[in-house]
Length: 336
Image (cartoon, rainbow, N blue to C red; front, side):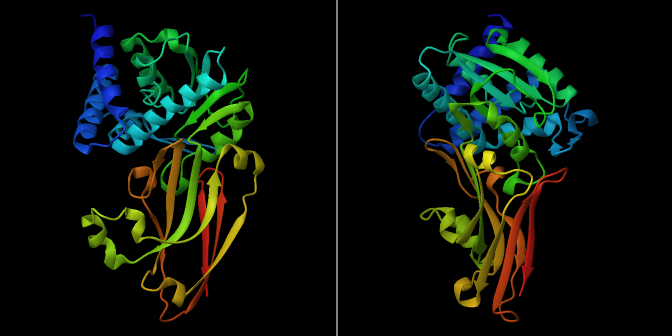
């Protein structure tokens, strides 16, 4: 068996596991671990090479180094949800555009194009084509190794070394895929990339993820041990949500310019009850039924903003605003 066949056989087995409807965490852990080690072998990536860990600072946020991008494979729910979500989006695009080869623009591929790679075991080059965008030249070299190892050149329409926040596609695309984010849309350029590329998405095309909703909410820190050991209630049971402060979709991306809205919330002691820790919570609708909720993934871990002292201040006024730029994220103002 040649190396192309060997790698693709292993990839097909892993992909089938990732596409299973139910989440079996033991099976999922095994599959993502196998995928990680397979791709590390293919690219010959070093865990200790400083160039593989170094981030790339961009005008609209930080691009993580290739090693840290590779480590994202081990975020099990993230990998499963995005692979399944992209698969469902391609199937929907095939129904929407029955006479077309589906064109996927993948911005911020990392060294493996992790989310697109499994699609090559599910579709043919006549059914789907990818344009890959990557800003880091070291990462791009590894991406070329990945493509060569799996022999999937026929799936690739183009590979571009570019900052996706300034890229102008030559044609419209059917699917725009980008996962360039951290929890609460911190530090990385997910928003800027989406804003830049959504105008090139076909009017009937699909954005993956479809929605990234950031909500302000309160936690009772005394509940944390109970939440971790609770197998009856979903983790969101322990959140006292206050309001949605941001929702990134293809439509909202088009509506924002350089100034994002300020959202103001009043919180009283009565409303808060025993929930005194203010957090931002991330909920991601990847595509259709594929949703990542708080605590399920590194992408959706709560971000602590402040501990509120209602004994001293029975009412708080809090404002939130997303700020773009080199260090994107939410500016929060807490007053009483």
